[in-house]
Amino acid sequence: MSREDADAIELIAKQLATAQAPCVTSSFQAGGVVLIHLLRMVRPDIPVLFLDTVHHFADTYAYRDDLVDRWRLNVITIRAAEPRPGLWQTDTTACCARHKVEPLFAALEAYDVWFTALRRDQSPSRAHLALMERFTLPTGKALRKVSPLAGWTTKQVWAYAKAHEIPLLPLYDCGYRSIGCEPCTSLPVDPSNPRSGRWRGEKLECGIHLHVAPSGVAP
Image (cartoon, rainbow, N blue to C red; front, side):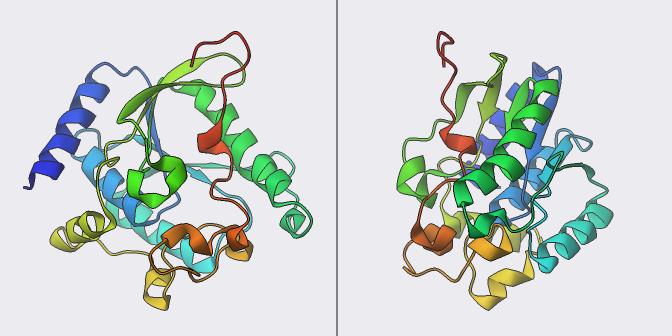
């Protein structure tokens, strides 16, 4: 076991020891799957929240279902109350808000510790990501947001997957590096920036991880 693996497992164990209702969010990209693998060593039945935006690649749905069967994952699928397929064509910000931000924040009301697979090397907007931080939902409820892979690199994520024989989303074999909804995901324009293939370069984030606490509530 590498030092990075051991540190991540130690952080996970400490956070789970005091958690009343933990969860992990995953779109089943490489980092998310590696994080789930680590979490399962401590809490095999941890809820895995999957945002069904109704715009995912067919490969993503098939891969998710296969991994759920292989690992017997406790997946909870979240979807907007009133999805609007195609909204991305006129407003990607409104589309992300309706299909990602709003349903996820509503679902997170039921949890007190939220694990994510965010990493600092993914984009400039994540360069100062903390391993753990307080995250406040629009209602004012606060929870712990934990990112055990914050300091990992893409190379380390892939090395871990290979070492543990973890199958990855087949779309990586087609050249994709950051995979979200099909209409807003393309091959990276800049090979050195995996997220340059998201939203046609219009933005770096969907809005979930740029959330600002409501006025009067400490972050």
